[in-house]
Image (tube, rainbow, N blue to C red):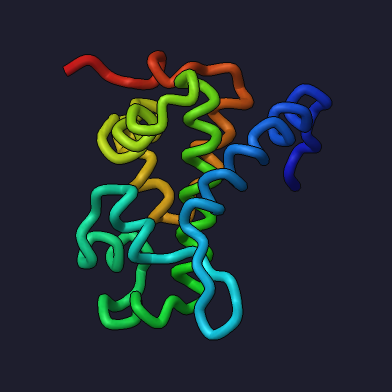
Length: 142
């Protein structure tokens, strides 16, 4: 059973919402009369290629352009993690993306946040922020 969020955690989560909405708005486009989070814009923003994105989203490369629910879910989850990361990095978006994609996290057997999101463990990454652990404390000096 999941523990209830403390008032501080609830306030912190609410503070992240504008960041998520700002990021999502940048990626939004209308397709067939409905708004979606553009996989092409996301791929460009993250500095990925289509193969890496498909692998991270756990879909085949040829499904990216159709943007099924799984892709939309992966983009939303990544944005939520990035918003939490940006909050601890002074809103430096590029630093947040670099951290997300490249920094090994000791508490997670040196996996990156990107790898954890792919393994459906985004909540673990976001929880780090609520536990009061700064990202710099989690990075291993090589």
